[in-house]
Amino acid sequence: MLRDPGFAAGWGALIDAERRRMISDTCIGIFVVFLFFAYRNRPPVSRRSLLSWEVVHRKLPWSVIFLIGSGFAISKAVQASGLSHTVSCIVLDTMRDSTPLQIQATITTVVTFVTECMSNSATASIFIPISLSIAETLHLHPLYLAIPSAIAPSFSFMFPMATAPNAIVYETGVLRMWEMALTGFFLNLMCIGITILNTNTWAFWFFNMSQFPDGIPERNLTTSCGAIA
Image (cartoon, rainbow, N blue to C red; front, side, top):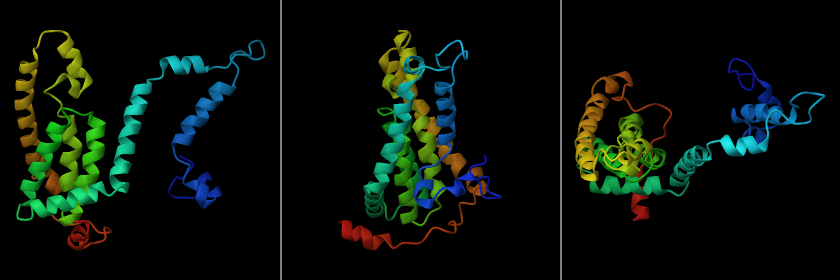
């Protein structure tokens, strides 16, 4: 709270601009953990610290950290490599005569079925930057395509590998593969319809998607897409 309270300069302002980029809210959590490692359990009787590396190594959910971290890394790579811009150019070329609703429905459907084979975070990390770039290309409100791209990765209903709860249910032996896939398919279709309906009704009004937000520079991506081609 005191690093950058907003209404006044915090202690983060004391650090030079080059190093300030490396300071975030994560540093606070790391500092608290460092204190647990440094402070002794029962001073001066015991020399053991409150927290040991053995405990951290045994109880910390490393898989969650790698899963979330890889999702952020994929998202950054999609933007830095220019993949999101390239895909948006392809969409601009193939769906030039399509309406925004058709583009939204296509993206929502693709994301929904891709997430059946990938983790939710990885799917969202790939498709959200692409959706934002497509929206900028077509001069649409970014949330018009980003909201479905953020919600659709949660529609993991068809296969056990789609998400951990599906695998747990499948391991019980109550459901066979085709039963889960068939039921999940209809659930996917229902969720796609609900997402598109909500995005084009109350969410469209609530987020004022009829207006392109200020502060986003307009670019003539048709010219740059021609350069890529």
